[in-house]
Amino acid sequence: MEPLVNQDNGKTAGIISYLTIIGWLIAYFGFHQSNKTSLGSYQLRQTLLLHLIFMIVRYGLGFVLGALWLSGGFFSLVSLLWIINVVFFVLWIIGLIGAINGEEKPIPLIGAMAQTMFAGI
Image (cartoon, rainbow, N blue to C red; front, side, top):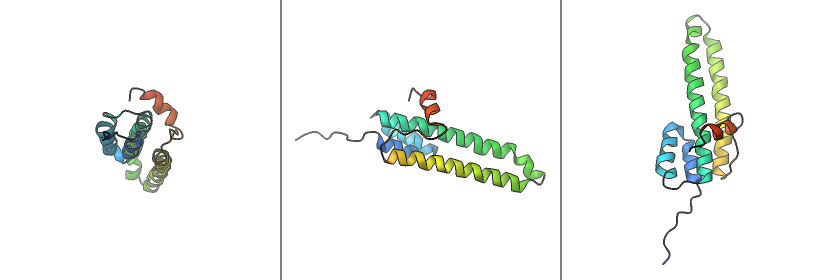
């Protein structure tokens, strides 16, 4: 009888990493640490930068531009935040499709930067 061999090529870690920052932590510590693969590392680097930039831009901009809301610019703030959400959602979908297909395809705008910034993952 042959021993069971893990056939996962990092695809599972890549897909799970797209499911919020908590999903990233689960993918990194639960899947990637015990089975480091090129695809898993690639996707983890991309999603880490995507999650970080989203949190900084979305919540930082919301906080900073909150003063507009107080001064009557509520519509402008809501419109800007809606556009930001749509842009990040599209980037997230592109990355998730790449992870599902098992491709090392960079997310537009941030993919190449993520590979150099988090080369240690």
